Length: 593
Image (cartoon, rainbow, N blue to C red; front, side, top):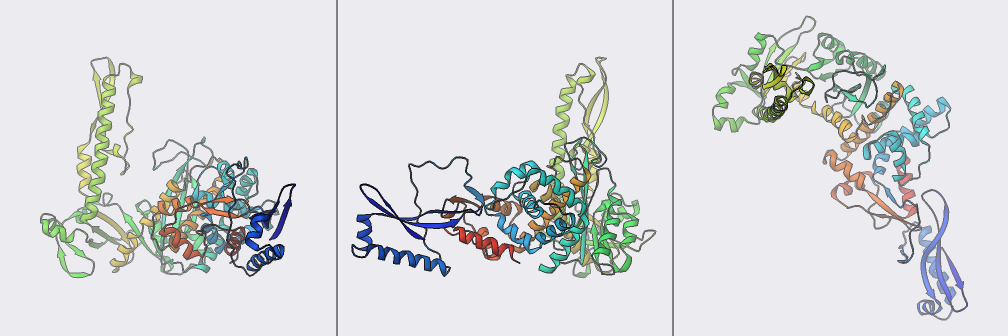
């Protein structure tokens, strides 16, 4: 800091000037403190040796800065002066916590390896950071992501074309990036691979069908080209491998090739891993593969698809046990008919088991029952039944008024267990010769009643004989992978990508996968105290307002969550003002791992 004296015809003005570096790296100056005219200066510093006393004061400020002490910031703002035009003054700092995890995983070093390998000039690390943080905070298309890059407090410099080009290189290193993340995540945390979960989902695209985006069975029932993702997740809910396939690929063909690859590349051959997946993967080949080299399987089994003899045994009210009690046998119908008993056992999980080998493996079928699960299923179905009834009434009313065939509206009947239209049946009638083969619909009550037989029941097949407690515990953890897919679809809006080339689609989902890991690890560091919505909204709302020459003013609400973030990561953005120097120190701390 230094003294500036401006003399005019009628007065002399004194001010302390400070040098500073802007967030873009530019060196400039601003007024730290206006000391006023001659009269004010002499009143404050004395008439004798005024300049000497001012110099002593400035030297004390400089000494504090030299020793790293924070000096008070004097905000000098002119209410009559307009702000500068086309200057961005508000920035996000919530991404800094994501950035800390990114650098802990050495993803910057990974980008350098790729950049050195292919010898391109643009900054891949900067682009990947932007893609990951933006996917979590403001999910959008690649073009929108580029436009939103100015929301970060750091200056980001690359062109939109570089984002698209980066996808080509990320795709080429699809397997390397997954392996790099696996290796480096194991360095910063103790990952739990005793149980591996696998599931598939599909993402639809607003594009024409091509060699990779194919029409298939959409779980969202969208008549659009699909891309399929298979995701492996560890026992703590952290992803560690994925595969991307055309939308018409059979789910059962995706698991074994990916599993063979990561068992070999991740040096997991021969380890006692338990693989857990859903009923779609309940094939003999998958079971046969997962009993090799000490592995085990826990796979959901549809009770409806069991042979009649096993189906009757599964839903029989007698012969049930409770975990931890090997003596008592329960009849769930007797409990259901006794209100007091039902209250006592409402949250308990009953089970029964039987050996039912396939042609290739020895396995046990475990069936569980819960009154709580029964109630949940019943409530869901009743809501779906109401929606089906409402739809039937609306369509029938329209079709009654139809005078031409083209005006007759049809309902696409579904067999999907989550679709309300599974309770609808079609009836063709003749309407007095006015419209031949008119279509009417009715509610299929028999389908509804048939489903109620299975309320509360859940089937599992496994080769882990005599370890029912572990099996049930493993299966209860499946919700984590379902939650991961929900985050990718709803929170990350991962199918918001207007891409058509296979390599770029794969790279897009790879960046979504990296974003999912960074976010899930953030949840882990926060001890799973907060919901997805709470965390993302908090990070998104952590904005600061730049005051030129002074630093950044926090413009967000301080909460328990922001306090936890600052304490866990050692990053403090909740002071009344963040000086440029302090912000540079935060960035240095984040990047040096």
